[in-house]
Length: 219
View 1 (cartoon, rainbow, N blue to C red):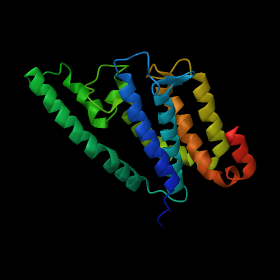
View 2: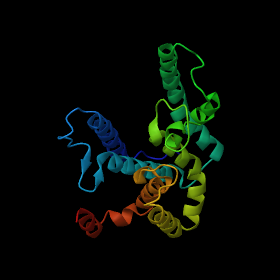
View 3: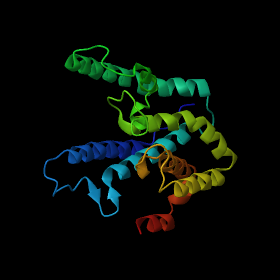
């Protein structure tokens, strides 16, 4: 049985995607005194949009697979949604780099293409040498979350509150010492709490839709 789409989530994901694009433009403008779309008092806008994107992703996956999940079909669908486009884009830019470098074998460590094949070279690039070209940390992080989702879903269905509390505790513990990636909001624990929060929001959406919860959210 096909799940009904949550159109509001599609809208939020679109806004987040646009926000992330604008944030990256702000990262490269020459006027460093005026960056309204780069940061605010407590952090960077990129981190906000990415956290919401992960939250929506977790919520949508739970919405689609909370009743039944075929793990092989799930992984096939996720593969098709990411890797073909990533491989095509990567090959195009890597050919461009080979032309610029005037060498097919300009990479000193071709063995690191292994991380590229997995799509996590951008996420690991701040930790170990990789052949990173495009995709940044976000691609690797969403791939990791997609891989872990069947396990997360199993634990969530067993005890959603304990799963959420565990993710929250891990987030707090590693907030000042991020795992692998040195930027806190790019850590796997930061992304995980956003992801699981999205699942909680979908599971308890009826409670959150009443006026009292709405007023608390606004405050």
